[in-house]
Length: 105
Image (cartoon, rainbow, N blue to C red; front, side):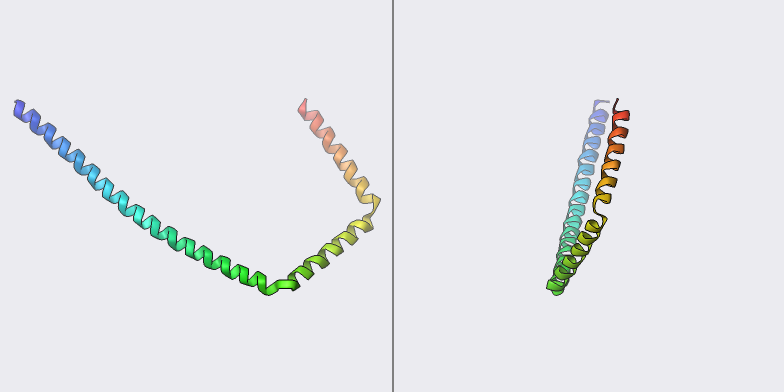
């Protein structure tokens, strides 16, 4: 009877060690695949970044001039609104402060 118990314990231990060994090799294989995919993804991101940098550099001064033109047009529109815009912003600020004050307790 004692031999049966030790045999059972030995089989269980061997099964447990074998299971851990199998899982360890599977995890190592998955880690290798993840590393390969990570390297591939990193190179793809670098390539897209280089293409984007090239496109931005190709626009160069033209893009800067367009942004400056848009900024000056926006400044002109804000200035054209004058004090009316400031008054509207002040009224909205007061309404928001009142709203927060009512809900804050």
